[in-house]
Length: 302
Image (cartoon, rainbow, N blue to C red; front, side):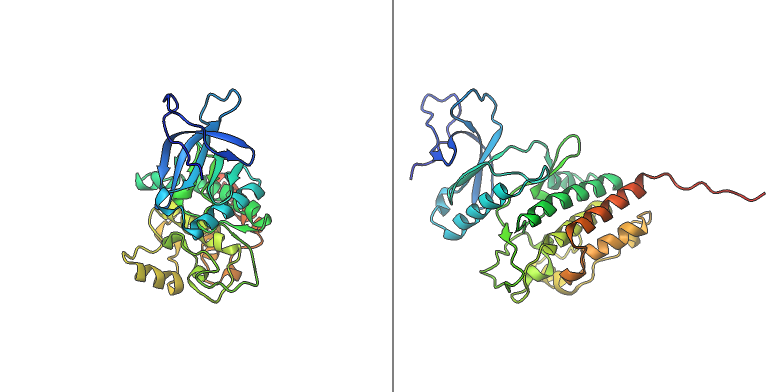
C-alpha cells in the first residue's frame, strides 16, 4: 500500500497522496496526533486550492495492522458521511480502513478552555450544550451514536459555534444488542462514559450521548469535574452507583429548570434521560430563554 506523504508543501520531493474514493489529496504538515492516529492538513491535489482547508486522519504506522483501529476508521467514515449537521464534522472522502478526510474545523477545543480555567457565562454554556444536542440528534436520526462526547472532541469558533469532531468511536444504534466489551466499542474517555457503557448486559442507546453531554454541561456550570476520583476504579464505581451532585447546591444562582434538566441528563437509567432528542433540545432552548429574560418587575400595592 502506498504510504501517505507528509513532507512540507514546498519540498521538491513532495509526492501525491494515494488515490481516494473521490480523488487525490495533497498532504501537508501534521496537525496533531493521539495514541493511535495522526492528523495532517490536506488539500485536493488537482484544481486551484491554495488553502489547507481539510484534515486527513490516518492510523499511526506502528498500528497499521490493527484490525480494530481500521474498523473504527471505517465507522468514522460511514457516520461522518451519513450525518448532516452544522454541529458535526462531516467526512467527505475516505479509503476504507486507511484514512478519512474532513473539512478543518477552526476554533478552540473546549478542553483547552477548561484547562485554562476559563468559565463560560451560564447562557453561553447552555447555548453550547443546545448546539451539541442538535448535532447529536442528527447523528441519532442517521442511526449512529457518537460514543465519545467530551471536551477534547468539541471545537468552539470565535463566534461560539460548537462542532463535534472525532467520530472514531461512533457505533450503529442497535436497541436489541446487549453490549459485550468487544461488541460495543466502549473505550471512550472514562469520566464521560455513561454507566451503561460500563456494563456488558445493557444495550447502548442514543441516551448514552445525552449522559456524556450532561457531564460536560455540569462541568461548564459548576467549574468542577462530576466525579473527581483520581483512580480508574474510583471513577468506575462513581459512574455506576454514585449520584451526581446537585448543581444548585454548588452554584446558588442556577435556575431550578437547569438544575432539574442536568439531573435528568445524568440519570443512571438511560430510559430516564430526556428523549427523544427534540425533547432535550427544546428543554435547553427553554432554559436559554429563561436566562435571557429580564427578572419580573415587582409591583407594590398602594
